[in-house]
Amino acid sequence: MAIRDIVKDGEPLLRKKSRPVDAFDAKLWALLDDMLETMRAADGVGIAAPQVGILRQAVICELETDDPEKPEILEMINPVIAKKSGKQVGPEGCLSVPGKRCDVQRPKNVTVRFQNRNGEKIERAFSDFNAVVTSHEIDHLSGVLFYDKEVKSPKKK
Ligand code: CO
Image (cartoon, rainbow, N blue to C red):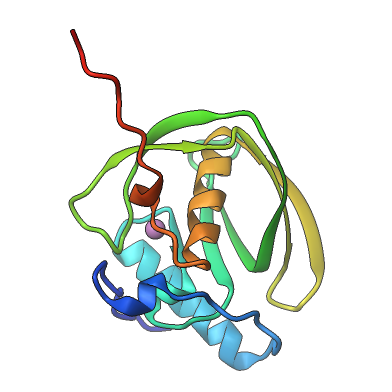
């Protein structure tokens, strides 16, 4: 595994659409392994392939579980949000946009169809924090950054 350079906001690549993955091979696995190592080194909870300069539809999310000591690392290849419901607003940041945080509106619940690193098709539902992380990472695959969806809080009186 190796830590890769994180593409920063302002680089045009980050705004491009990623292509589907069609080969579930050693090259993909190396990319996923490097993405995880890069995410951990940067202390993030999610990373998308375009953030390491690869315009392919692959993301990694660190999800909350019932045990706060044991988050789940989930790889999603070719993910599509099949269903969403509800709303939540909360602060977000991004490894590609250092120093910026703002409130973003996200669905409260999402159902995602994706493939794992072996190409097997999976459907899973996520809520609350996990819906935020998955939505944020999947947005990267369309060139969307979190602050595009900034919710400005009403002015305090
Ligand atoms: Co991000």
